[in-house]
Image (cartoon, rainbow, N blue to C red; front, top):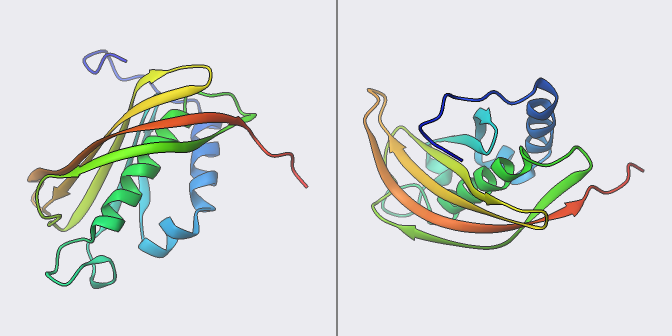
Length: 153
């Protein structure tokens, strides 16, 4: 994926599939996270900062930070697969670079390499202030596996 290429658009069907799947994630709903951007090989997820997602010092908890990063990467990978596919995280590594502070966190998952079976994504999480200032608070890498979607019951 070339980050400097003109922005491609995801098909409406793919975007609807991503948003529908995200809507079924109980953890994302519980955290208050939402998808803000879907593009081929890239997804942005925003998590508003609120007391329920913070740790004892008032920063967003590493678990919440990691969860939105993991989901952003997973959905970025899913944008590149057919409708009959799903993805599951095989592993991910995240470095917490700075306290997760801001009015909200924005996780960006970007596909680095999409294969038939395994996909590798870059994970970035930014602390964003209301005035638009952004600070990278976490960065990582993730490997996902493509699996067949379960048959509807």
